[in-house]
Image 1 (cartoon, rainbow, N blue to C red):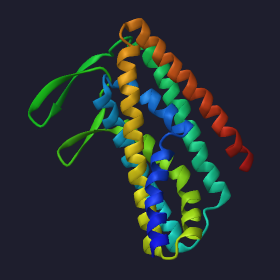
Image 2 (image 1 turned 180 degrees about the horizontal axis):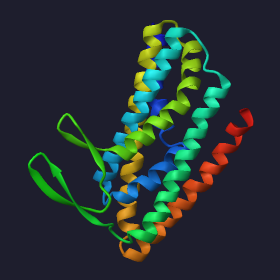
Image 3 (image 1 turned 180 degrees about the vertical axis):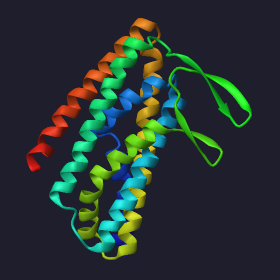
Image 4 (image 1 turned 60 degrees about the horizontal axis):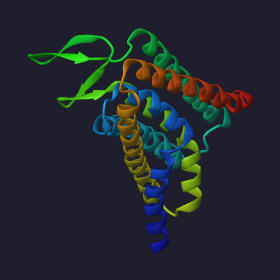
Length: 227
C-alpha cells in the first residue's frame, strides 16, 4: 500500500519534470509571445497542461482498461502530430514576426453584450462563461496523445490495480499542469524584459520560431522510421 502511494506521488513529481522536456519548452516559447508578463504566461501554460492532461487521462485510461498495448505505428503517428505541431507553431511565430511586429493587430470581440478590443492575436473559446485560449489547449491535447501510450505501459507494469494506475496518470497530469505553468510564467517574465522594443520582439519571435521548426523536423525523423 505504501509502495503504491509512493509511486502515485512520484507520478506528480515526474509530471512536473515532464513539462520541461524540449518539445514542450519549444512549443511554449512560441505560445508565450502573446503573453506580456509572468501571470499571463502562467495562464497559457496552465491551459496547455489542461489539454495535455485530458489526452493523457482519456487515452491512457482506455489503454489500461483494455489491457492492450498502443501499436507502434499509432504511437509513431502521435509523435508525428507533435512534430507537425512544432513546425506549425514555429511557422506561425515567424509569420507574426513579419506581419504583426511588436503587438499585433487590434480587433473587436464580444462577450455577451460587452464589446471590447483585444490588442494582438487573442483568439479564444468560451467555456462555462470563461474565456480560454484555444491554441495552447489544442497544443496540449496533441502533446498528451504522444505520451499516453508509453505512460500507460509504464504504469501498468509498476502499479498493482486499475484504480492506482488511473490516479497515477491523473496526478502525472496535474504535475505537468503545474510544471508548464511555472515554465510559461518564467518565459513570460523573460519575454517582457527581452522583447521591450518592436525590433527585439521580432527577434525573439524569429528565434523561437526557428527553434520550434528545427526541433519539429528532428522530432519527426524517428517517427517516420517507424511507419
